[in-house]
Image (cartoon, rainbow, N blue to C red; front, side, top):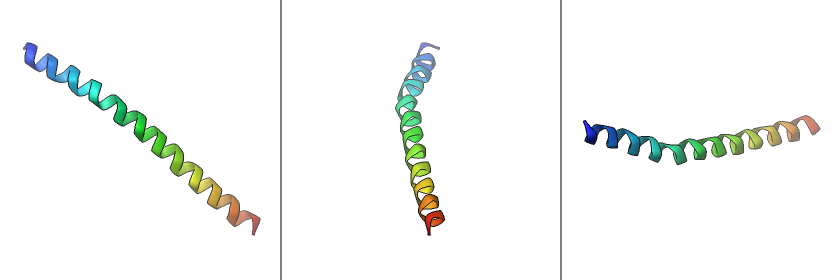
Length: 43
């Protein structure tokens, strides 16, 4: 019981940086797409 609780808490704590990194990556990707779209529209 305690081992499974410890396992779940550890898993959640380790997943937090992954979620934050995904958010940063998705922001960067969106910026790249918008810059490209802007460049195409300027032509």
